[in-house]
Amino acid sequence: MSPQPDVIRGTSIAGTGRYVPERVMTNHDLAQIVETSDEWIVERTGIRQRHIAAPDQASSDLALIACQRALAMAGLEPGQVDHIVLATTTPDRILPSCACTLQQKLGATRAAAYDMFAACTGFVYGLGLARGLIGAGVADTVLVVGVETLSRIVDYTDRNTCVLFGDGAGAAVLRPAAPGEGLHAIDMHSDGELGEVLEVPSGISRNPATTATVAGREHFIRMQGKKLFPFAVRSMVESLSLCLERSGWAANDLDLFIPHQANLRIIDGVRERLALDPAKCVVNIDRYGNTSSASIPIALDEAVRAGRLQPGHKLGLAAFGGGATWGAATMTWTLPAPAAMREAEPAAAREVTT
Ligand code: ACO
Image (tube, rainbow, N blue to C red; front, side, top):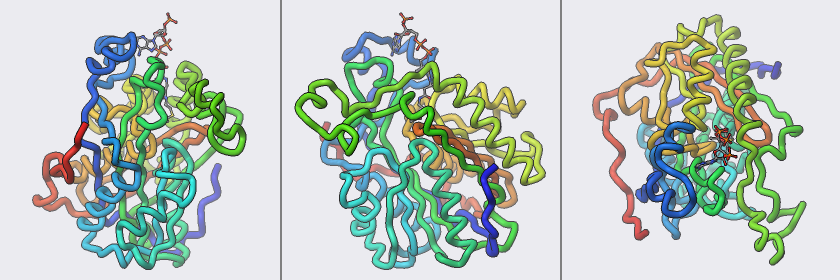
């Protein structure tokens, strides 16, 4: 069991935002590249399409728009942000951090900024960190953003992985709340024994880039999907169950459950084991694929703007990812859902040339 911080102040979400690149790659598009089919991908994963960043878009560009939208919803200026926690597996560069690049673009002049590598669990880890910072009085406004341009590390000759992943960003602004309001329980874990089940073998200190590593396609994601599947279901169920227990809630007390979107069959497995009403489970993997650290905040922002969350609602989140990492959170929603926020997909912020 993860130790819980000695929280003095409550922490709640004051705004959310998302951005996905305009370019859509359908299953039919992928079937032109590798030996696969729309039927196989839909049946085995639930994915129908994913969004792909334009050549001139890096992770910080996607994160910028999601963060601007989250801050606008919160009614805050970038200069009011104290910390930027950027969860990613695909930073713009190793140095400087993606968070610092975002900090400059956003104009968050007061903010400390750093990247967090917790793969698909990064947003949940970010919420845990934000609660610690705010609860302990270290920060008042924490921007947690999950962003990925996974298309840059996906091997489009490997049908086992290239059909799964997509690009996008989702952000949340965390602010102090009354004790007991907002975030309730957060549970976070890791197990490095499972590291090689999902990895990018080369490119940094273990195997620096050489012509041989590039020729061997070692800078792309490699995954043993079958090994991950049961672990994914088990870890999300156990972690969310622990949070529910700490909150004193049963699974069906939840008004909404947002699982990491890795595979529809994994989501269904978690939901069935929790005996959760399907109507309470957010699913958008059909439109975005697996966007790793961005998947939960993208789904959260969609739910908020669609009016699916109202003050007092009980929300559960659960994720697992490479590392391996996994975790969950429970919270009481505090943010009103004004009609003005109930929009369709936010208007595209830029033209895409591909
Ligand atoms: N199109 C057609 N056939 C394919 C494709 C494809 N895109 N991919 C694999 N196949 C083939 C395989 O080669 C295999 O053929 P074979 O039987 O002749 O060897 C067959 O389909 C079945 O492959 P399986 O691996 O058994 O398929 P499975 O039902 O397990 O589904 C999948 C594969 C979708 C990867 C599944 O195992 C999965 O979702 N695992 C979890 C993956 C995951 O969650 N990854 C991300 C976690 S961390 C993070 O989110 C960053």
